Length: 281
Image (spheres, rainbow, N blue to C red):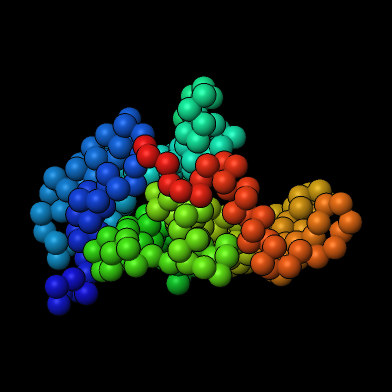
């Protein structure tokens, strides 16, 4: 709800436009984001809040049109990755040590962005394959926009819960800057459905099978998708890693590290990075 009224996509776009500078994107990405959001806000659809929908806007601009949702997706994702790199000592040592020289290169995600655009065009096939199918590509932008709304409008950024590296919230927020949190959320929101078409291969086979059943004398092989052996092993190990409860051990003797010692080690490491206290921009 927004001021007692149902929350609309107009509210979400307005929120992103209003708070975009808090994401701390590099200037070029920030200017591009402003222009893309502004292009949506001046569209004829946007002037009718009850009719405007990201899904309708997406349908109107999905054929690779400049300023469409594909460009918005790429700009937000690329800017978020840049923010992560900016706060990584390996990428930007000068941020934490003024005697070091570093230049952050913009992440090249054109191949990934091209894949996203192809998905936008492929999505029409999924509507025909599954009667219960719903949009998944404007959807990821909506998830991102909803997150920004919750952070900046519904609550406020001071109520955010830091990633629980230690049991002390105050310490946890000293390990990260808030813009890193926003960037990590942006990446997660915008990429969480990229594999969805693969998941729908079975539905595509079912739909095609129903059509071909009425045609005699025709043989066909259902489409099958499998990981290579090497990638299957990587996927299995990743799932095990995500589900596991980590146990930290000493390098020298392999003994488990007590939690109080682990927290001290984290503090010492971050002091070495000069990240214990947030550095000025």
